[in-house]
Structures are given as structure tokens and as C-alpha cells.
Image (tube, rainbow, N blue to C red; front, side, top):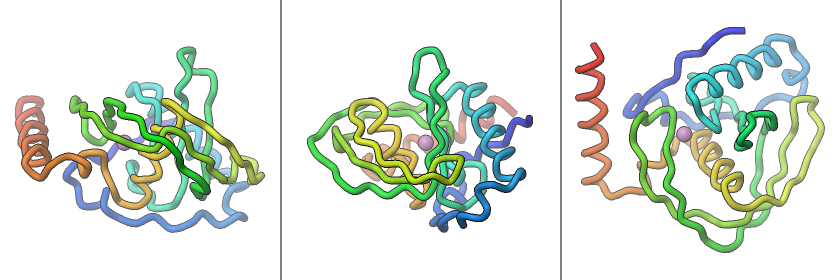
Length: 170
Ligand code: NI
């Protein structure tokens, strides 16, 4: 397994709109390996979700595990949100925007259809943190980041803070 480098805001590659995964691709060893590497990278970070866009692969898939024990890995390929309802506010963070957290309002409950890592179609109705996480990761596939929900002024402050952090780390 291998750790994958994660793109960070404001890298323009994070704005790429991802294309669907071909069904024949899912069974390929290289694709399955990439899923394993994404889980390893996400758990090590540590994070609860990682979209392919964040590792500079612009195809529509993502990995998630919101469990406390980190034992409920979920692979979501070519997701489609069929239904949304309610509202919730959650303080979100993102591996591509390290150290920054901000309240974002999203649907409380969603129904999502996707392919799992065996290529099987699945449909799930989820709420709470898992619903937040799936919506956040699908945004990545559309080139959208959680900081886009903030005001332009706040987003600029985030950009400056990250630039400063990188300078200190260098
Ligand atoms: Ni994110």
C-alpha cells in the first residue's frame, strides 16, 4: 500500500469536474489498489472521507469511514443523490484545507445511489454525519470545496492562513 499526496486549496486542480468511472474499470487490480491506498491515506491523515479529486484523479469515486472504530469502510462510485430533505449545520473540515473548520448547512437526510467496490448498485438512505460527509465528498467531484460556502472575505482569510502555515512549515 502507499500513501497518496493530497492536493491542497487553492490548487486549481481541485476545481476539475470529475468524469464517471467505467464499469469495467472497477474490477481492475490497479483501481482496487487505488481504493486501498485512498483508505490508508485517509485513515493516516486522519480523516473521515477522501474523494479521488483530492489525489488528482478526476473520476467520480470516494472513500468514507465515519465510524469511531474505523471499521466501516465505504466505497462510493458514481454517486447520484436521488432525494434530499431537512437541514443540518455541521462544523466541517477537509484534508485539502488543513486546520480550517467552519459551519456548513447541508441536507439532513439523503438517498444516494452508487456502485460499491464490487461494481454492485447500492441505494442508501442516510442522515447525520454520514449524510454530511457524502455531500461534502460529492462536492469535491464537482470541483467544489466547503470553503466555497463561506463569504469571499472568509475564503480569502483561509487562503492567507494556509499560505502562512505552509511558509512556517517550509
Ligand atoms: Ni474535503
